[in-house]
Image 1 (cartoon, rainbow, N blue to C red):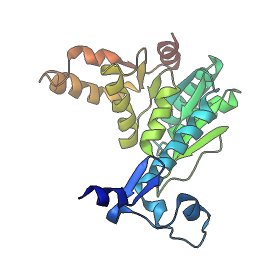
Image 2 (tube, helix red, strand yellow):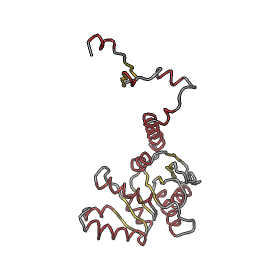
Image 3 (cartoon, helix red, strand yellow):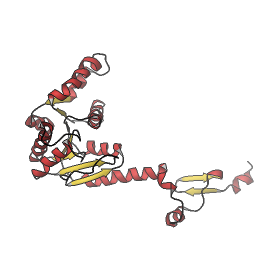
Image 4 (cartoon, helix red, strand yellow):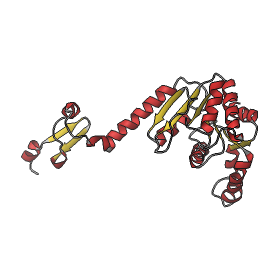
Length: 244
């Protein structure tokens, strides 16, 4: 390209982005914003998704910044009222609230509802961080402060950022996901002083045995990594492990 051609080269500046030749777009940013009859496919493109992700962080951080000390309680959405697990969830939520901690859950039914119920009935701060799913029923009625997320990773960040620890009741894939996410963050020292308590010896001892006798034995994790987990069947002990 000659110097004359370079001087005549047309370009389009969209904020920090420079577009030339075939990458140029018609109109200006203001025009596209204000033209209601313009194309709408931009809402399905990655730059727009980035803005939605950013807005979720802003909304989540803004809602939770002044909640105060909090503990996250995880467990199955399929736990039924009247079962020992549900009763334990209520007791944990109540005990944490009475100890001065807000209770954070995924905001759904089952064990999450139980923990929110215990916290709310004790006059504590009951928080639900919901997630957009095709089969979820929305936030349970015991949530006093709720935030609904589109993206799992934004929600997970808020759980870790605004919790002083996790207590994990028996649960399925979602519960296991949160458990191992927290374990990984502590093991890699992305977070420090973050207790993780498994509630329900009978339910969790099989998993712990596999981690000890297979995963650690084969050198896939260090034996000391298992010390990052506490196991109990006692509500008072769980609260003590999480708050001292």
